[in-house]
Structure formats: C-alpha cells, structure tokens
Image (cartoon, rainbow over all chains, first blue to last red; front, side, top):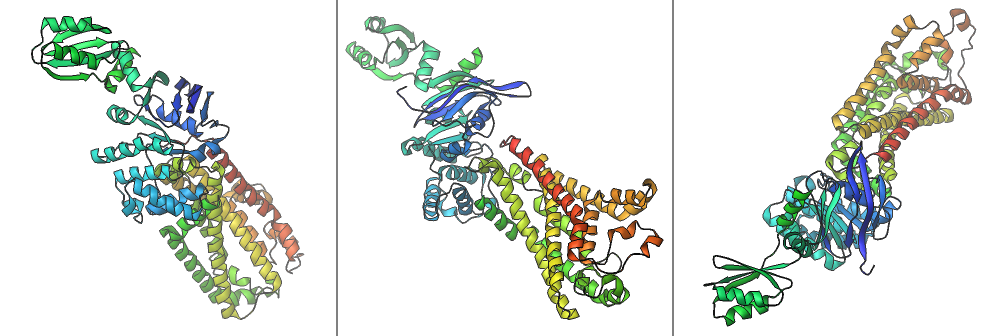
Length: 311
Length: 301
C-alpha cells in the first residue's frame, strides 16, 4: 500500500457476557491525519481505543498501531502512543509539573529533557503559568488541558483522544481544536472519538462512523458527503437578482451539468465536477446579476443522520 | 518500577495518614515504656527462674499489666498500619481516573502493584523500627542493662516477624482494593476481618473450650487467627523460657519441665511453622490480588 497506515484493524471483535460490543471492525487511519471516530454512546468507541492500547484484549481479530500488535507488544505500543481517557484523572496532591514529571519518569525521559518538555507542553496547552499549582485546585477545563499536555509529553506518534472536549467552555473547545489540528504537523496522528459532530468536522480529515460495534462508513468527509447525499456529485447554489428561463437553459447546456432546479432566486445546480468558473461566466454573460455562488458543503450532521437512518 | 516506588513513598510521607500513623507509633512506644517502667521490676523478680537470668533487656517489650504490654499493642496496631497503607492502593487510582492514565504508559502492569506493595513495606518497616528503637533507647536509659548479642538477634527476628505480619494485612487490604470499586468498601471489609480475628483471639479460649475435644484441638482452632499466631511467635521469641507446650500440658507434666530458657536455635524451630504460615498468608493474599489485577479490565469509567 502506498500510504502508510498508523492504525489498522482487521475483523477486531470484542464481546462482554455474550454482547458483542465491537463487531468485526476494520479501521484504517493514515499517518499524520486527524481521524474522527463517531458514533452514539455505547457504539464501542472506547472499547476500540482500549484494544488499540492493549488495555483490553480483543476477542478475535488483530490490530496494528504503527506496525506493532498491542496485545503482543503492549509496551512498544504504549511507548509511542498517548491516551487521553474520557474522565482524565490526576494526582490531586501533586502540582501540574509534578504530575507531568511522574509520567516522564515512567517513560524513561532524562531529567534535562523532562524539564524542557514540561515547559513546552504546558506552553502549548496554555497552562504555563499554572505549573506549580496543585492539580486539586484545577477547573474542569484546566484538567482537560493538562490531560493534553500529559499526552504530548512523551512526544507520541499516535494519540487517542476520547471525548476531549466534554465539559469545556466554547473558548476552551476552540483552543483545544486548534491544538489538535496542529498535531499532524508535528508528526502525530490523532484518533479522536466524539459525538460532537461540528467539532469533528472542524478538525478531522477522515471519519469513521460506528454503530453497534460495526463500522458503518469510513473515508474522508468531503467524499462521504457527496457520496451519501448527492450520488457523488457537486451541488452548486447560484443566487441571482432575477432568474430567467433562458439562463436555466444556458446552464443546462454546459457540459457536466446534470440538473438545474430553481427556487425563488436561487438556482441549485447538480454537476459531475466543480464547474463554478464556467457557471459564473454563463451567468454574467446572460446579463443576469450574480449575487452569490457557493458549493454546497455537506455537514457531518447530514452524513451522520443519513447513515443512522439506514442502520 | 523505581519511579512508581519513589512516587508512592513520597505520597505516603507527605500524607496526613502517615502523620497520624506516626503519632500512633509514638504513642505506642510511649505506652510500652510506661508499661515496662511500672512492672519490669516485678516481672523480673517474679519470674527470675522462668525468664532465665540472661534476658533482662527483652523483658522491656513483654512486661506490663496483664495483656497490656508493648507486644500486645504491636499485635493490634501493626494490622491497622498495614490496612491503612494498603486499603486504597488500587481502587483510589481507579476512581480518581489515574489508573488508565498510568497503565497507558510503557510500564508493566505488575510494576504498579509491586511498586505500591514495596513502598508500603518500606513505610511499615520504618514505623516498626522506629517504635522498637525508641523503646530500646529510652529503655536502656531506664533499666541500665545493655542487650546481649542474642537479645539483639532475637529483636531483629522480631522485627522481621512484624514486617511479615504487617505485609499480610497490607496484602489483604490491597486484595480488597483490587476487588472492590469503592475505597470505603475495601476499608470496611478489611477492618471487619481484623476485628473478627481480634475477637477470636480475645474470646477464642472461651468459645473453643466448648467446641474442642482436646487442648491441642483448642490450640489449632485458636491458631486460625493470624493475630494469635503472631502473638505466640512473639512470646516464644521474646520470652525464651516460654514453651508452647505449657498450654496443653497437664499439671503433672508441667512439673517435669526444666525451667531454663530455650536457645535461639530452639526458639526458631518452635516458631518456624508460625513464620511459614504468616509468609504463606501474605503470599496468598498478594498472589490473588496480583492475578486479579492482571486480568482486570481497565476502564476510565
């Protein structure tokens, strides 16, 4: 395969007391991308992450994280993987710096490097001034940010973030999402589990939707949206001052245009490819005044709801 | 594992729990000294023959009014220290959400439980040694008789015995901290077990007299309790003239017993089964918690 996969699972299955939580899951996450794992509560997102970390043994099937098998070589995986659990906990009697130092010690990072990294990750997560504060006094948002710092201190190749934005205020969510979207540039692959669709759409290049332990769909957001809702086509919306029948005829003649629908002042045009420039020219040539034009973006909600109706 | 051990030790030493336990240790030492001060002269003169001439210093630890001696308090207190050090080892990490974070680091799962157990043992050993050294030091000033080489060895073995005994209680507390999700549950369960054994030791002689057919049978029933095992071993170690047989002998047989102290080797042979049982109990507790912990699901919630 040309692209390197950071995470790959093959028929990964896990059952608890006869109930299958993760059912023959095939997951592919490329290196240096932000992958969103979506699904309702109880879809098996956390269980999947735990199996990828080697904290839970899979019932059957295999998983590979950066080429290592988490069940057989848990330490090799844990050395390069950072995990932020949904309910992240710290030692409340220690300061932020001490909590991070303990994790660094467990990762065998030497003292000088530890000091440098602690300052770096606290700076990144916006906690630089709270280094010597006892974690017991931290707010929910600060803990969550310290959780991110804690994940990054070992400079992981892959991070698993389980509902990282839960309990944060809007400003905190924005900062966190910015931080996450910058991780691939540092050579870190992110697997983000969430059901906050808007947030996932903002930072993720690819998504996988889980329902009842099965992967319903997997792929890049753009592609999924077009496939799911418009049969693989683009929908371009054109708003003009006064639409005329002639204009619609002209537009229909453009090569690649499949369908033109008119509603009030808005023409909605289905095309096989991105024909915005040709359409714009046609509209201007016909002397109709062009007010605005945009490619219809598929929101993750549309995709999500569509697949949940099906499954 | 060294990192975990260091962190756990730092946690213990800075916690309020450690401070309270240390006060308890000081109080026990003080009480032991007081008990010895008020009754060592009487004990020595009464039992000149029984104690044997050479063992004055160890009498510091065993003399007192009835059962209220330093060794009795150690028998009661060491379980409390062991339980206090182990009852929340695993489930507090679990409920605090730190366990999944800890185990997603590149450490073997067993080093977590080993590190905690070892840190507990170190803390316990420090408390025990402190108590005995305090009593020895002030006791030495008080009675002015230095310990003989044999007495020092006996006291050293006594320390080892206490640590094994404490390790059992810590192992038991840790076992329940692995099994139960709530810190309060594991604490209550272990305290209850301690209390039942304590009652058994205290009231056992009365109960067992009615159940058991023979004096030997009665002793076997009593020895179910680790507290009783420990107190018997203590007596053999620190009162060299004492024989386990005294309890089961008839009056006629007793009159044939030679009232001289046992040599160190003989004392050790006498308490060997006790030591083995206590080590066994600790190992069993630790092994069960170990196996359970290794197989447990680690979930954040």
